[in-house]
Image 1 (cartoon, one colour):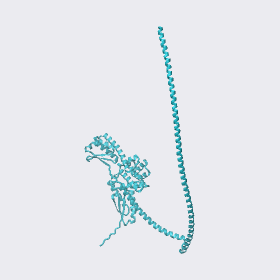
Image 2 (cartoon, rainbow, N blue to C red):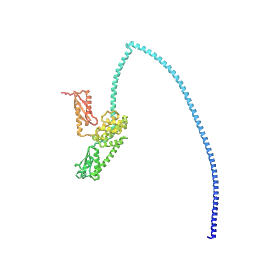
Image 3 (cartoon, one colour):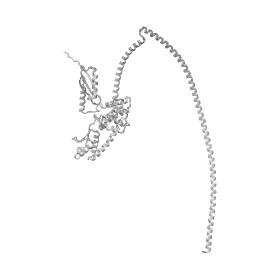
Image 4 (cartoon, rainbow, N blue to C red):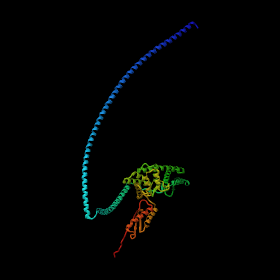
Amino acid sequence: MEPITIIIIAAAVVLCVAAFFGGAQYRKKIAEAEIGGAEEKAKTIIAEAQKAAETKKKEVLIEAKEEIHKSKAEFEKESKERRKEMNRQESRIQQKEDALDKKSENLEKKDEQLNRKIKEVEALKEETEKVKTAQLEILERISGLSVEEAKDYLLKNIETEVRHEAAIMIKDIESQAKEEADKKARNIISLAIQKCAADHVAETTVSVVSLPNDEMKGRIIGREGRNIRALETLTGIDLIIDDTPEAVILSCFDPIKREIARMALEKLIVDGRIHPARIEETVEKSKRELDNIIKQEGEQATFETGVHGLHPELIKLLGRMKYRTSYGQNVLKHSTEVAHLAGIMAAELGVDIKTAKRAGLLHDIGKSIDHEIEGSHVDIGVDIAKKYHESQEVIHAIAAHHGDVESNTIIACIVQACDAISAARPGARRENLETYIKRLEKLEEIANSFNGVEKSYAIQAGREIRIMVKPEVVKEEDTALIARDIVKKIESELEYPGQIKVNVIRETRSVDYAK
């Protein structure tokens, strides 16, 4: 390497080093200047912050002083008002004390006056006793009787008169009470019946399904009778296909099964596809629909009667009663009618209307399942009411509505009466001819079994029996006893709806001829 090149390189290195150190000094001077400016700025900010803090402190002190002054002024104002109120109360108390002092003085004066009057009354009493004693002595001398003897004589006479008057009064009161009770009962019953408008419902054990044409009968029967057998097996009814044009008859003593079959058959006729699989599907669908209808009917009955809060299962049982009849009368309609009548009677008698309606609606609840469980519908109804936690009044009314137990409450008596009214209403129930004739014959047979009865006639569809007695055998006063004995025997031996009037007639005829 040449010496000139070395010198140039060395010079370049020296220049670079000099430039580096010069730049470092320059940057140091700039940094020191910036630091100095920042310190000045920080001091200025601190000074301004201290001034602002002093100003804020003065403002807070001024506000605090004003608040203290305001609170002090309010406290002084309240203190003045309280002092005024205390002064007023002290003034009132002072006035009351003055008034009490005056009353006390007046009472003391009245006490003194009463004491004087008591002394005067005692003096008069002593004088009266002396006069009375003197008069008694004079009376004893005149009458020749002592005071005790005179008292006994007077008491005996008064007792006799009082007994006679009391007997007459009791008889009049009993007669008047009986007349008023009969009048009131007739008024309540007639009012209840007038206010209750119920349907006359009579159902049988068969249902008729209309067909669009006679060709449908063959489709219902099916090949070798498989369709009709499937329908009868699934529903438990008898399907009667006879010569009746465009109609088939469903026969079954269970109205729910009969209704399911009717609904299913009508659906099949509308659909047109009739075969065992379709029949099974339609029957199941009809069962579900009928369950919904039963629930809706129960809810409708509770809505119509205003009976709320029933257990859902009780509502379903109520709905089932729509498909149950008693002597041709729809049991749900009968129960609804009894509930309305019971509510009206309860209102007239001033007892709980809601409980009376509830008992009336549920009194025949046992009939909804009495064909499925052993026992009378009364016992079944009582068990159902207990199961779903009905009140004791409702349970007792259910148990007593047919007289199986004695009625111990007014509501039980009301339900019993309303049940009889609803059942005995003309057109409500019907009997078949054979049962009707047997009942009338049994009624006349019971009447003829008594000694002295000449003839008996069952009239008014068996609701009244007229009995002719022999006047030479039966005395006038014995007719009431015979009527009572016949009533007891009818009640013990005969089953009948409503009530039967027993009318005993004794007639004496004197016949002669003018010649």
